[in-house]
Length: 264
Image (cartoon, rainbow, N blue to C red; front, side, top):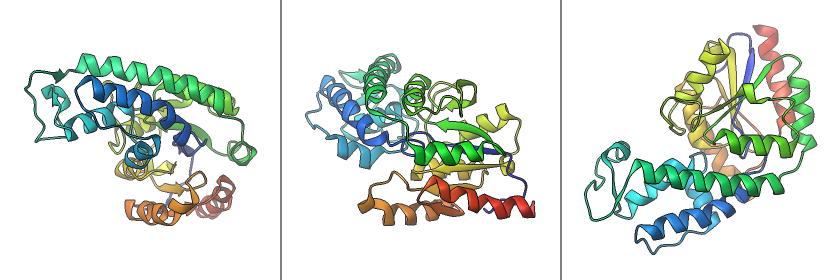
């Protein structure tokens, strides 16, 4: 979908899009993920890279349930919604309460790690600063707000996208979810007082692009922080997900939006 009305806001995914947080996040997350699986008798161990490739764009809550089900762990019926064939009874059952405790543990470890390794990036800050003069900026993420706070502070983005302009599928919604569910984008538009057609979403992951497109928001794919060996495939996947353009740097977004503004 190509925008046909004036673009009032840019809705930006955070991880892997505004900052290169995917790789370091999964370094910290892998330790928690493997401890979580071990606590339910699963002996399989995942490397950070395996988790990154298999769950980019999803939050830990969704990934944990997906892995538990994949390894035959019984899950509480309330957690089995995305998995109609999931086992729901057994000697050991993953409950919503237990999952929440693991979510909090993963959130704490990843937040601490990202706060120490991320740095400001002029290739992001400078284009976004220029774009902010004509567009409202907001972050729309599957990640928890506490994690976002640490990342925005470490990367110097606090002034451009303050806490009031951040929306989390984990913390902002009545019921936590994760992309590709469009709920967090629909919520962000409602809170910002925007029709989806008045915004442009910028996403690096396929689940993220699917989420924004499903919400009716014109979407741009951004592969600036996608590893070079994965870029060609990611570009093809993003186009298949419905993005109307793909950029390789944030600076490329500015000229992309200019003709849309002139014809609005």
